[in-house]
Length: 119
Figure: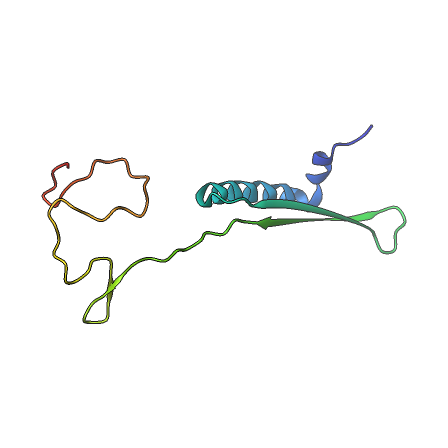
């Protein structure tokens, strides 16, 4: 009877190869979604004869991930007279009711002004 590849892989490194594949797949999917760029997950199975035996082989499973990279376009900051960096220009006054956009667009709460009322 023929044994499936997955059943054999469960015995390689006591199942750790499958666990490593599983964890890396989930992380790769999240990275692809976050960056909108592609990546890859590769499993290399190497089989060699066992030294000193004509009846056994050594199986090595290697997991390789090529994750997409995030492109950092930089952040605009303004230097203060003291040498600090800030997102607000120190010579421009704050305008009531106007705030900087959040870095993460995942917020779903209504915007509030400085008085705490909804805009």
